Image (cartoon, rainbow, N blue to C red; front, side, top):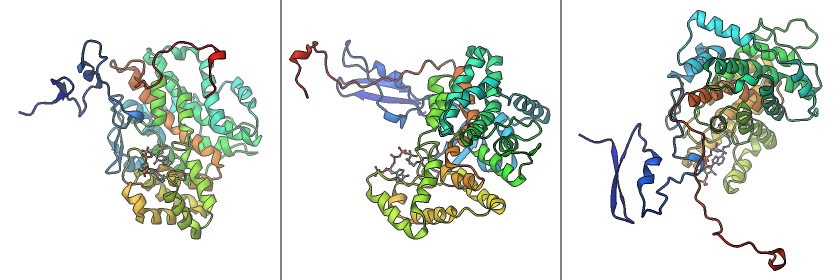
Length: 426
Ligand code: CMC
């Protein structure tokens, strides 16, 4: 009968150890018993950027990066994108099961009736200059929200936790839309409770003189699907930031902002514009291949997916539905050709670099009239569901503690202070 253990021999001492294997992992803390002597701290795992370290057990999202599979609570992303709605998916992610009608109605009511923000939030947002990046307005405003809801600090209280999660999911579109309107110097538009989650967001972004904004159903649905695709992605950078910081959506927004993560959709658009035409693609590919990592093909590659990102496939499909309404974004032709060339090129094939979720999303957002600065904001709205569900999972996991990694210290050994008159400039 095979045993679920790992036998280790420390060749420094000749001592043998047997470590338990559970769920395909050893506990790195079990390595600490492996010592060369009483003074030895014990063996640690060294894993910069968590390439092979699980930080938690989770039941929310499953990814098989080699096969290109993404599932929320067991449901394939393709089925959810085709048959579900963002709010239903949010309920699923948060609660583990799809809602029955009454549960869904209650949830929708709760989210819809927490979309307003305190009037002081508007004044707070007015403090930013008109050209402030909306993602940084979003991060700062989300951080400021905690002052309006001081009870949010009672993180051990399940009812308080849930109330804050509903608040955040409800208010993110409002703050995101306000940040956009602020950058244009346009008046803020209050939420419309009659509209869907995506429809209300479009109303707050677009409404002008009309008393009632009616979103185009195709665009409303496309945005809803994009929200579904971005709702969670297990232990990605911003979710890990949210878990490690241990209650801050502002940390998630800030971590998402970078060009290698949620800011990649913005970077893709800038890259496609820079390339400018199909004829210039070969030169650009050459620059990527010969640049030693200096120039990247933005929207390509993923830490986990070594296959086509399933979300990119869905996005590619909805692009045509959006273009039917908005007219074609000419950048799509450059993107399609870029993908075709890259997928045949040995550099990308060898490194298993495929289009990720950000490769096509920006082209759709642009066709819908959003400026590039809003792209990461559009990512942050749905990802709030993932951040907070993952955060709640962490809070209720008795094995979790304050996150505090170890380091391998390679700096100067202890030495005595030297007065300035005796120091040499280096
Ligand atoms: N273009 C060109 N070369 C690339 C790219 C790219 N986009 N991505 C990775 N590589 C190369 C990289 O230079 C390295 O080559 P070598 O082995 O010769 O040094 C090899 O592929 C492995 O890359 P890595 O940097 O070790 O991979 P990683 O897992 O650390 O990085 C990534 C993953 C997503 C940060 C990276 O692929 C990247 O920077 N992509 C572009 C930015 C992007 O599209 N980000 C969105 C990710 S999906 C949405 C999200 O999570 O927010």
